Image (cartoon, rainbow over all chains, first blue to last red; front, top):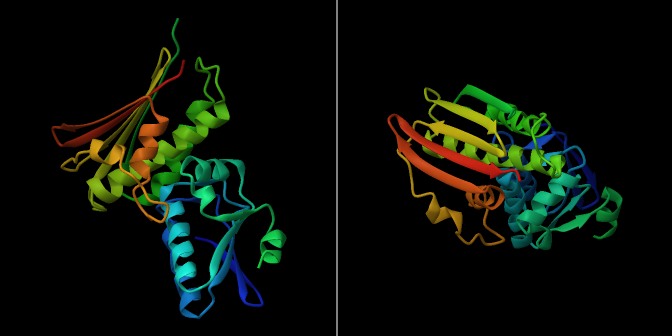
Length: 111
Length: 140
């Protein structure tokens, strides 16, 4: 999975540079987040602007990150969801779990 | 005359082919079939259920064994879309997962309930050399 990370003080933004997040590639996002948690970086923003499709495995990786951030007194927030990705969160009701922002700037300001 | 479209494809038992199968599902939604609903939504749903079904077949039924294969048959006739995923596994009680309650913090278990939610009929049955998951979408 193509990912890039940007540090903004104590906040790390992960930009997912893939059109799809599925069982083939979402494990890599999970691993990247676990590495950041091990380094003590527990406030994450996941920028999904490039992602057009996410399946239940992709959601599972995000839920894993959400839980790990929360247990370390941090938080995981999402931004820039395309319409199908937002639909997937609504289908699974996970839009009620995650904080979702329209832009990375709004997500950063929320910390 | 009724339109008829059928796609019959075999893939190795590897998740790298999920994208290919999902895109075929999406494209079927834009084929010249008789359907008056929202084609963008149909494309998303076909991509999703095929991705979920093939993931289950690769990772669970075929236990990620690279020597195994999958066959996917997508067929449209009259106003019914049928998608079959053939695996080489031993089968399981799919209905026990269909209505299973998934907690918000669960990392797994959403795939099969999503298939049941988005499709009109779902059946998983044993065959001679494995099992077949049939998902039917009534388009009227």
